[in-house]
Length: 372
Image (cartoon, rainbow, N blue to C red; front, side, top):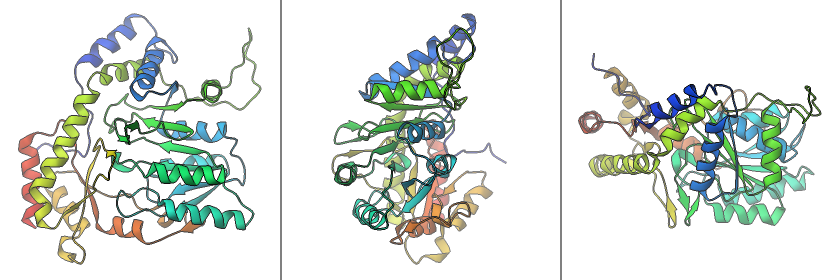
């Protein structure tokens, strides 16, 4: 069988080896070293945001954001239902309550109109949400102007989950920098990677300082171990950060490659009944993953049928996110739906989108898709 074609594998550029060697030669293997600070600076500068702390994952960054905002037991946090579970798990870590909200049809992000209605309803019930989590799905920015209008109307802070959207912009503003706090992920499948890692950003220095303190086991300034708060082992290691420093040099190229890959897929298969996630006015997506929707009513071309056909050829594809309100771990929590996320899940498929996907392999994938 041919070598496996993965959905979104890491893509190294060569600079990573030099940066890792530099870290190893300095003997700075432990967390919070010079490479970690350099990586944080690169993230801040690229996204034009003042403050950044690098952490062990995007999920850890969301968890710290919730703590910084004072979210605790029985507090409610509005979350999109159409996302990866890591966007919502931290709400449970805080013994808080996720309030799940459906998507809008165009960009698939949380529906701003429904969001307004949901918050009004929760306030009517005496349960004003403590925070709103917004996710930029598959690299596509959510409708931030409308979402921020709602957040300001009710004075509820916004956490931007830009785990998949480094390099994406909304009205020329970098994804992850428009809310009160933003997060990124550098997992192995992201547009650049530290193997596993994430970051929390904000224009509020006090929040980032507090998150940094918590991420290092909440060790207070003292000549002995002194702890006044519950801390977490969330620091990003200097070695992992050195990978990120090397990867950052290729970010613009990776975005260009991802977008070119999307454009080729779209040009070749849209006429065969495949629908694509489209950029709206003022939106620029890094196209982290190319996703398609099957033509409505075409049972023989169902997403699972096609996924299995590709799998038989050792090609990895994946269904879109199964909505959180359909997940056993989240099904008991409040959900406000419009049917959009369930429709997306029933019709959608993520196609192999590696920035190192060869033209030959992409043509093979397209051949398998249009064959149906």
